[in-house]
Length: 149
Image (tube, rainbow, N blue to C red; front, top):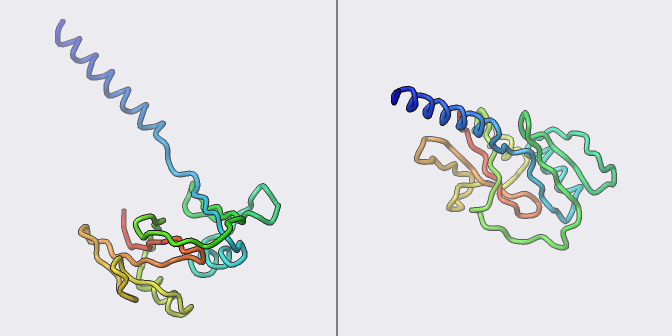
């Protein structure tokens, strides 16, 4: 009898954990408030090579990009100024081949470097992932890495 109670308790815990895990939030979108929408849109399209997707506002103040199967980047016109941001606050993207991506940045004369600020120097994380950092036109920091998940 005691065994059955323990078994039912364990099954209940496992079922609850599965249900809660299935309802855990996932990233839908990140929104950035920018000073110059056209400049920022060109950066994310041309430099970051993100796909522009339809946005529902059609007011000239929004541009949306696909950043993954179920995630997006929304840039919104209206910031009063361009501000400095700390590198600790950044958006991270991964690419299959970091060297190909940094060659693309070099071709466009886009500045990038490692966490310490060493120009054009990728950094190796403790888990073996290579990464570089760059800034968009509004000084938002972006990490690009070769994580393989």
